[in-house]
Structure formats: structure tokens, C-alpha cells
Amino acid sequence: MTKRRTDELGRILIDSLYEIPNHFESEDDERDYWASHSFSERLLNSLPDEPTGFPIPERILITSLEEVPHFDEELEAFRWWQRREVSDDLYFSLKEGTPDFERIQPYAERRQRAERRKQASKAKRKVS
Image (cartoon, rainbow, N blue to C red; front, side, top):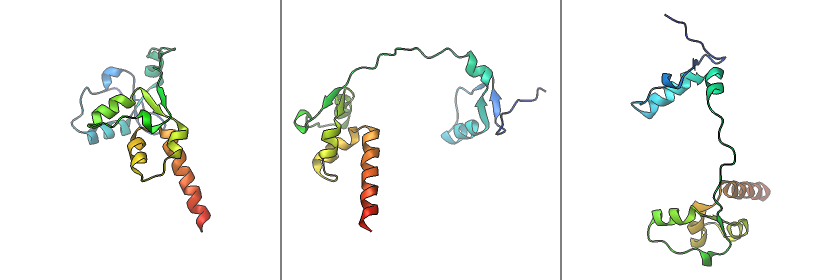
């Protein structure tokens, strides 16, 4: 029996993509597998480089609520927002908890939501 190589954390090193199960019975099984296995340098170096110059489609910048239609279904809204982006000025001009804010919030960029949380936490610290 061949001794399995391990990394510095004791995880079994995977040298081939064929060593990875095609199917896991549950998310717990998959989590347990990845907690005890890791890609080897040999495997990582054998993978093709990611293509450069991947064209990222341009997104239309939404600067006004008047540009945003009302949607009957969430999927319809999701599809519309895939090609659009909330401007920073619009996002930060909306008051949290208002219907307009709630309409835009799910489609704001992560960085915008993070900045809003950061601003809110600064304001809370100043109150004391």
C-alpha cells in the first residue's frame, strides 16, 4: 500500500482530478472531504492557465430610481439587474429602511453594502 503524501496541515495531497469523487452524498460529506484533502503543487502546476482577456460585459450604470422599472417577479428583476449596476451616488443617497432603498438594496454591489455597514458602525461609535 502506498503511503499518501500530506501537506503541512496533515491534509492528503491530491495529485489528479480523478482522485476527487464525482459525487458527495451530502454537503457535510463534501466539507469533510475538503477539510482532509488539498491540491498538490504537481496538480496545480499541471492545470492550464486561465485565459487572459476574458471579456467582461459592460453594465449600464443606473443613476436614478426613475430608470428602475417595477417588477412583478423576482426573477424578472434579477435578469434586468444582471446588466445594470447601481451608481454609488444613488445607493448612498437612499435612506435605509425606505421602500426605495429596499427595492435597490439586493442589487447593490458588495463593496457598496460593505461601505454602508462601515459608515453605520462609525456613526454608532460616535454616539457614546
